[in-house]
Image (cartoon, rainbow, N blue to C red; front, side):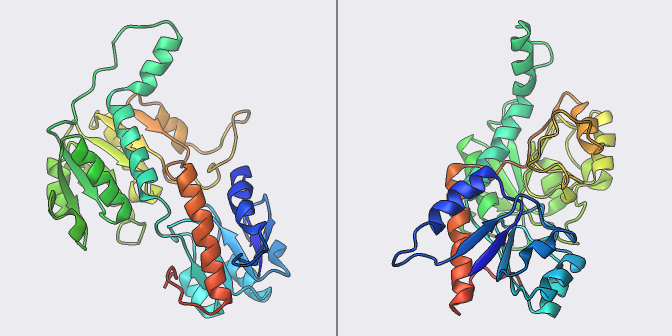
Length: 333
């Protein structure tokens, strides 16, 4: 199988390359063509003479792109990520293109980053770092709150949400959760409640649910109004879960104690790119960073050695299963 690997970074070559260099017995037998450009309507043609394409969370798999891939004879899209909201699934089904993903590469990696954001913003570590580097050792602007004995509200209790719930338990927090489907592994210490009750009672709210039409802008002016004025909000899932304009209005009104975001709306053009020498056109980031109680990271919650290795292995196993007619455990319906 020949795979056109779009949006390649150096670390992709390291982890995927190591798994494809071995051509001996038990190897995947896969040839990867690493392409630095991300896939879109203009670059999709680079998949010519390949059997499959591989993309990430910021790849464009809209109908126009899938049309090009279909015309090139591509039958498989390999997502080296869990989310698939960037794929037009109706078009993929129409064109007979199978979509496989990596649903559980390292839940702990994302959950640990979510807690890191919560702790950093709550205790103002990001501000303290800048102050001390400027020889300012005063404590002004650095006051936080204890998470111990507080209430953690986990929205979405799949593998990542469950990992985050366990971390909160370790901090001595009471954990409540909202999900359509209760996770039996959490029954000993998590209480499932309605979303409204979670919003009203939580001192820390962390989002761990996929982006679907029904979850789009689930955090908006109405849901924010139900939260405590001292709440810490964290999002490591998808930017579209939060209405940015409503979030900014609430921040102006001093609604939140802290906000930590690894994802945000309209991030696609910025994800994993270096614009340190440029003026970015995206207005979302500078507006959010104007608030001292907000911290943004670069969609890096997944970025650990363990997660990268797991992503590479699962992606190649998905490709191998497809090529050899084996059960497709990670198919996106």
